Amino acid sequence: DAKTTQPPSMDCAEGRAANLPCNHSTISGNEYVYWYRQIHSQGPQYIIHGLKNNETNEMASLIITEDRKSSTLILPHATLRDTAVYYCIVRPIQGAQKLVFGQGTRLTINP
Amino acid sequence: DTAVSQTPKYLVTQMGNDKSIKCEQNLGHDTMYWYKQDSKKFLKIMFSYNNKELIINETVPNRFSPKSPDKAHLNLHINSLELGDSAVYFCATSRAGGPSSYEQYFGPGTRLTVT
Image (tube, rainbow over all chains, first blue to last red; front, top):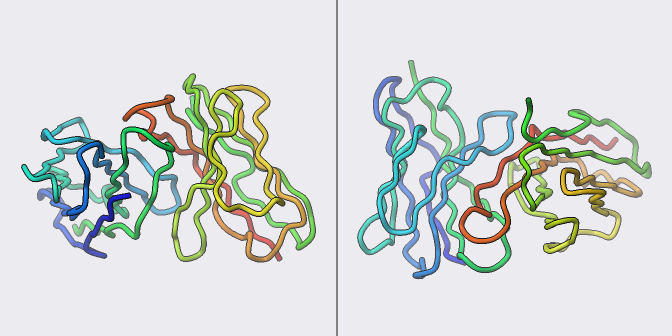
């Protein structure tokens, strides 16, 4: 399993874009990048995933570098409700469908 | 309509007791999971079932036994509860196979406290 590295914490002002980095330098060709978040006292919530192209949905954008060794999750207009722990997870297409959570990044949105 | 529900939300019990946590999903997904989040907030897979068949069983004590009566339900029964079992237990569901299997929908969690 590819290892991921994320900063333990980040702050962002409300209304600004929050850019959360993730390093996954050992990622292999058959592994996807997934992002989840966990708001305090709630279950984890799926945000977005990608293989090599940039992806966007109603929640966020995912930018994956050309060499796939790192990615950035972008919350375009952060709100106070986006305060959460964000997890970057790398998983293979084949194999056991378990999510492996690291320590994540604790993102605090400040008013 | 809640997609993934768990009961109870809170469970306080004494050491040595047997308890169950129930999970129900109305998403029509084939695969269901149990995760455990300990006091240090580490979230770890315990089990997964696909169409009522066990497919993942991590290193979990035999005191934990998942049961899937049908595709929409995956219950967790715990025998002889120990202090170390205190944690938040999350149920999750997903479609089976491929990248979609990692798009998992989590329940609200059951906070188990063993005294």
